[in-house]
Length: 377
Ligand SMILES: Nc1nc2c(ncn2[C@@H]2O[C@H](COP(=O)(O)OP(=O)(O)OP(=O)(O)O)[C@@H](O)[C@H]2O)c(=O)[nH]1
Image (tube, rainbow, N blue to C red):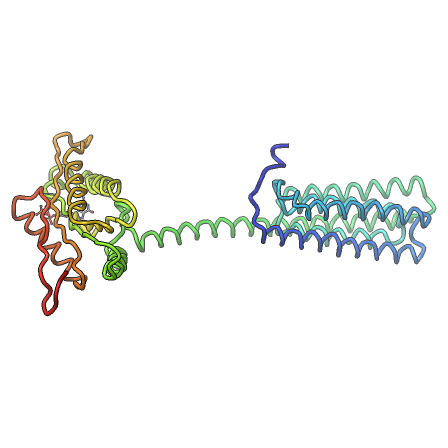
């Protein structure tokens, strides 16, 4: 039972689409079936009284209505396939077969409706399920012929009926092969779609992220920083930026190899990301240079975060380089109201330059200086 029932979390729009489809399949299909049988009955091809005819179609329509009510009540949501494609196909095929038992001269006409039923599943069902229902229909159709020719030999032309059955069986096989072909195309399309989705996801990621560290790339970081600066410019909050540059990184590469250099870059990214929160972010600007943006922050807190980062990095242990100690130089600059983005970045860069010049492994704060031609807060 567990395989059949579970909650799919179906959306309401999807459920509405399913209800419309089930309604259409059962009402339109049911009407077509009833009409064909009714015409056959008017032509005297229905073997049975009016009571049998009405009793039969009352039973068939009760089944149709039950399936419709089941869907309208939303109980289909709990099925593995909420669209109920196969249950509807199995039920409609059975209804068709039962009516075919009573209709002698127009039996094939009634059975041809099976292809209309089958096509509702071609795009939605598994090949195997359609093959099963095809075999079921062909065999039960044969069983009906054998029973009718045994019980009512005067009502059937055995040879003609068998030829019609053979044609029906071949057509069912052809439709099953077509369904199989469509199934293969569907599977290929689904796989391609999946692959395409993954590629799009990767491209979107690459457009904003640095592949090695997973941090934002320079282009995206600059976009975000410009927006944050705008908000800060409206007096919403203070922002501090920091350039961070790993010390003697070339030497690390030369001594331990490029792979370990990459590992160092990743560790720095992890440490920095773990320390930042909310709107704060860290981006890789290229090589071993990073930009950290600390929003809603004053210089005191920013400095303490950056010092913590420097301290944690110095404690990092590397399995393949136990003696390695990684240090970083950092230059901080707090946003001054009205300051252009380039000037703000240049101040942070100058501070970093000074940190390097003063012997590295330190954090230097850029002085707040008046803007040319304008007051500074
Ligand atoms: N492993 C690795 N190395 C990189 C990557 N990108 C750039 N580099 C290397 O980073 C090194 C940067 O060296 P430099 O600019 O001389 O800086 P530094 O050795 O850190 O010296 P200072 O910054 O003055 O302390 C170069 O050797 C680059 O080849 C990368 O993605 N992975």
